Image 1 (cartoon, rainbow, N blue to C red):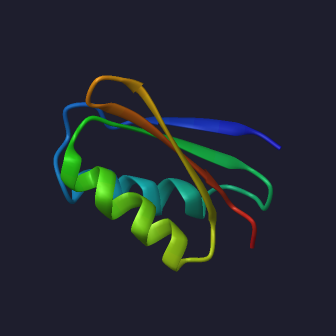
Image 2: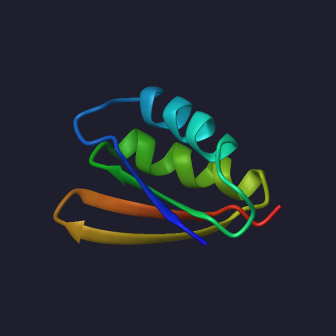
Length: 75
């Protein structure tokens, strides 16, 4: 298992979502994509998309208005 960090700080929708889709397609089952986000729209869209794909999702607020979305590729 490996972790890949995707820095999307300062980027508005739909850029973080598009980058997350592309990044997770390169990962293997069991790998974790950590998407760093500081835009509220992306904070809503990225986890919703990941859950709709059936991935495991956890969210951690690392600073005020900055989050890390952990997406485990499980299929």
